[in-house]
Amino acid sequence: ASNPDPNLIKTLLDARRRYRSYTGDAATTLSQIASNDDTDAADVSRSLQLAFLAPDLIGAILDGRQLSELTATKLKRLEKLPLLWEDQRALFG
Image (cartoon, rainbow, N blue to C red; front, top):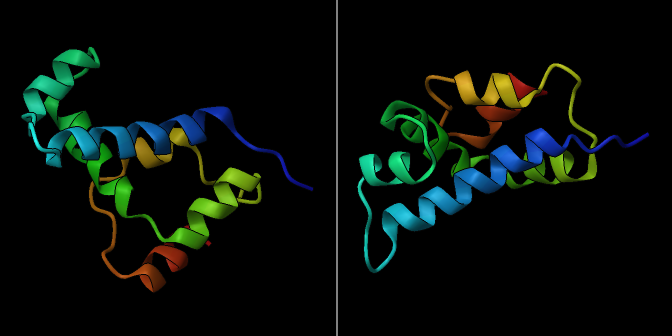
């Protein structure tokens, strides 16, 4: 059964939006993004890495098929996302 988590989906959408802001034509600094989002630069920095989450993990999250242990809080507190998708799969199931 699928059970999409709106907070988890919002976390992914925020990561993509922040990444586009950071790398766009009018590149924005981490501090500017943080100020716009009423958060701190460290949160933005951790969030940016989520733009590189394995596509199948993103699909599972959007479909609500992620493991119950995979929450928005866990993703937001993740200090370093593994670069290899297979390592991400091992971490998040």
